[in-house]
Image 1: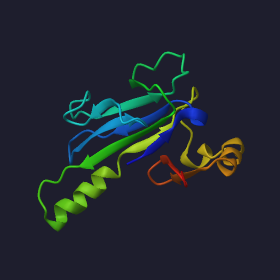
Image 2: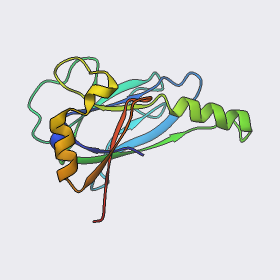
Image 3: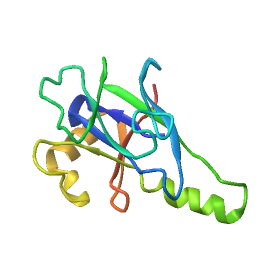
Image 4: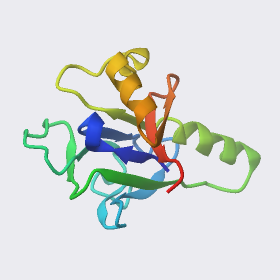
Length: 151
């Protein structure tokens, strides 16, 4: 369940892997629980995998062709994603976890996507310290999420 704040990051990419060794089903929402799009076999990518681009309300640029655009009316968004199990066996549970870890969430800049360690630039680190939001970053999965603290 990634929480996505596009206020400072700008457009944020959400990559859903193809339903080959597993399957992810879910929906991307804005903070008012209005669905932006379904993902996975029941979604617009039809299980083939896709790169969704969650755009902030003030985004004026054209979405690159290789992204599925999701226009949000506000800056706070999140996704409810579920890895679908083939069975309840330990092996299938482990496979579903491995498959789910292929999901990527990252800020999408005009330049090519930087290596994971370079995402936390000095200006981003400074704004993180000043905000009431805790940012979670995992260099192994290129995941970038935000979680509100307190209110």
